[in-house]
Length: 451
Ligand SMILES: *[C@@H]1O[C@H](CO)[C@@H](O)[C@H](O)[C@H]1NC(C)=O
Ligand SMILES: *[C@@H]1O[C@H](CO)[C@@H](O)[C@H](O)[C@H]1NC(C)=O
Ligand SMILES: *[C@@H]1O[C@H](CO)[C@@H](O)[C@H](O)[C@H]1NC(C)=O
Image (cartoon, rainbow, N blue to C red; front, side, top):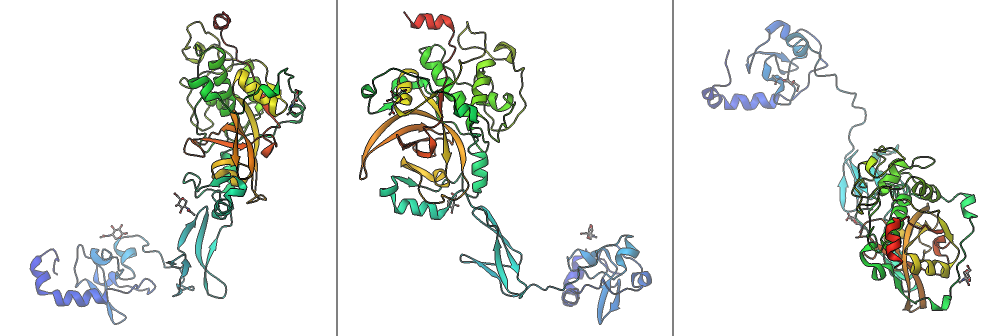
């Protein structure tokens, strides 16, 4: 018996080894009978520890499986190791066909998978034995034909489209479910009477931007992530803006959208959407804490404190030392038409709007949005956003009026996180359901403001 760790042996028997390795290529698993039972089991590598089988040799040493070519005798596993290994190979009725599938300029093997944007594709054998690439048929959030269609016709549609890497590879269904998140207003809210205001519509400016008027009191752009929480983000942001404006900055605060996502759960669906009227009622009755105290995490985490209570009871510290209560608001009110909305913004700050989102909106890059016919029959959803101003632009379609709106898809989307959308035509129903509410700024600060 020879032990193979000895270098000397390797040198003298290179030729023998080469032949042995060439022979060590078969799998004898389905030949039953006593082999190792006759020669015995050997430890380490012992080439003589073998039995003739089918014109070659099978082995009963510990080395028989380390080459990854199984040349162990059929009864090696059961006799020497007391295990049933290797398992019998599956019947090989469908041998791998020679030709492959093509994906672009890539060749794919049988069963090989590839991702085509939001769809998984696999190279499959057809009943006629041909190989074909079979793909899922989801509508993808980023649709190249929409982008090209919009960009080819920019002069007429008025805006440009782009491929956002954060949306690439996702389905439109995901986008509608997790990037929007406003449940359609219930009938009784739709019938809510708009407030009446007395003003001169001709005295309204042609351009208005809350960020210029009120500076840092206006909340920046947030990113809701893959959580359908626009209902919570837009509510918290409108209330925050108005706290800063009405208190002249003394109670400037960013209110917590997560507070609504996690705690306003009655009849609401957290990251699967919410009703705006319920969000405002919750804010009115219980108030919100600030973002620093309960930061946004884009998921349905449990409410960490009691629904009712002071800021301190929620473990938060007020910015203005006299404040005890959480940040509450008055009843929400609805604004009835274009000029009413404009007047409201100049007087009290940004407002909340609900819009219908069509497929092409996800790819908006800049310009004055108006939904195109591209992807118009695909799935749609409702989204809530914050109107912060308006303006008008001379274009080759004539003068186009627009709203200036804050979205919640991060600041690399659109025009630094904002978009402009046609004004005065109820584009995407954006003028149908516009609401606002008055903040309950601490009375000491209100008194100071009136001096
Ligand atoms: C043989 O292969 C099996 C499975 O891969 C492994 O568990 C075992 O340790 C191997 N035996 C030797 C001696 O390498
Ligand atoms: C879109 O962007 C993604 C990620 O940045 C990229 O992989 C993909 O090829 C782009 N698609 C098109 C059609 O440009
Ligand atoms: C909007 O409604 C107000 C009354 O609330 C009315 O005075 C005004 O003319 C209307 N504006 C438009 C553009 O319809």
